Length: 109
Image (cartoon, rainbow, N blue to C red; front, side):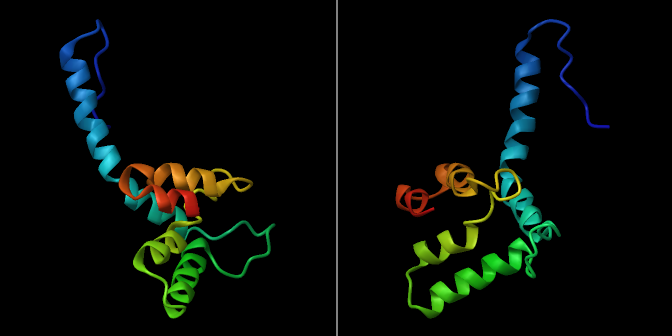
């Protein structure tokens, strides 16, 4: 099991420890998002493709249409939030990628 913050009293050591752990967690975000995309959609929805195949297909269509890289990227990541919020996953996707991209991409999503 991973070590945990002691929290016997509030200390700079605990916050330093947590900050280091959080940086690793933040850096792993693309891997977590990618694993979410690879999960198949619920059998109740009836989709034939999983999120990854759908996202790759959507991005490929944008590329074939001659879209610039920003729009291809938006097409690729548009369903990242679907597992957490199917009804408004575009908001979740935009929020997730907002620190890493242009405002225009968040607006597109």
